[in-house]
Image (tube, rainbow, N blue to C red):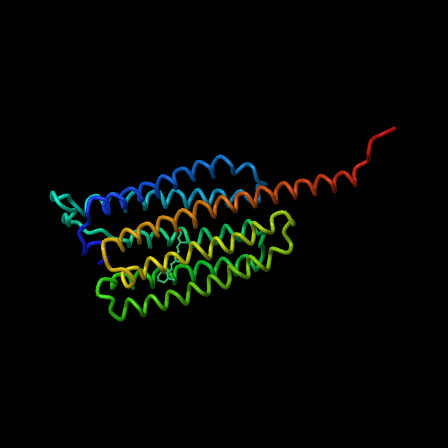
Length: 269
Ligand code: RET
């Protein structure tokens, strides 16, 4: 059970959470339009990344819509406050959504950075296995967040080990490839590392929120944290990768044109 079900909320606390959920799924719907319409700006070998952003947008849109409806049905106004209405709110839907989005977001990075062959396969396997390991151990732990007994801390710690494995590989992927990318995109490639680090760290922060701030305000802070993390780690990250893919495509197109220019006869008399 989640701590959300252990409090009553005043009008503004309840309403802010409700509004923040709509921001979340509206951002995913908007992102979907962006990725569909801009995928053709990159060379075909990078377009899969935009398709994958579309997959992330649709799955997150549906998950946030469901969680938002769940919030609406879990509480009712009794004239003074929003109180329990019979069904329980649950953050577990988020974890199910991450099962799709975490492996896909990391795969996008391999595609846009031009990782191929054995390094691509190894990266994909490590990202997927460690990603699912991180999510499902955390999922088990969050069932114990109300009493915060040993399983909450033990599963949370095991999940963190997987998280560190992912971060180490992301770091290597970014800094191991940035040198062979065109100079003008290098700052953007490094920004991928900082953006991912900053936004992904918010999720364990939200997991820990009941231990830091166990109150109705803490719940509001936690749902805002999740929403900011979702928008940055999915939408802003996807846009950043799309911009990198566009710039690299332009650069490669230009190089190919130059190479063609050297080898082809000039045609003058
Ligand atoms: C958990 C459990 C507590 C310990 C850690 C966690 C990390 C979660 C992360 C989730 C990232 C999700 C993303 C979703 C995007 O769609 C599972 C909360 C370390 C990093 C990026």
